[in-house]
Each structure stands twice: as structure tokens, then as C-alpha cells.
Length: 42
Image (cartoon, rainbow, N blue to C red; front, side, top):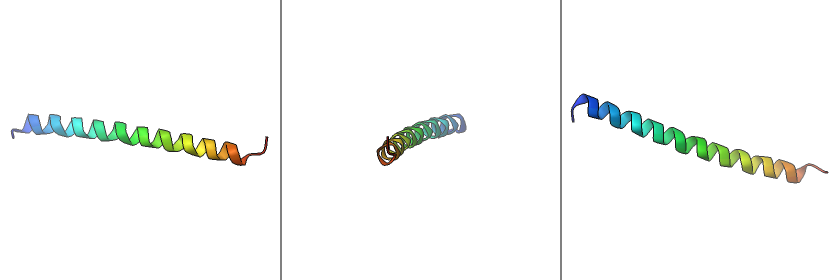
């Protein structure tokens, strides 16, 4: 593997993992909002 390819692959992997992490965080936040909403008396 020459260096530019490795750097491109690393940037791609970092971007993909960051996107997955943000999705996980977003769904976790949704679940937290829903549970807090259920616990809060109207």
C-alpha cells in the first residue's frame, strides 16, 4: 500500500465511523427524549 491510498482509506474509515457514531448518538438521544417524555406528567 502506498501512502496516499492508506491516507484516503483512513479518512474514509474515520468518516464512516463518525457517521455511524452520530447515528447511534441520535437514536440514543431519541430514546432518552421518549423515556423522559413518558416519565414527565402532562
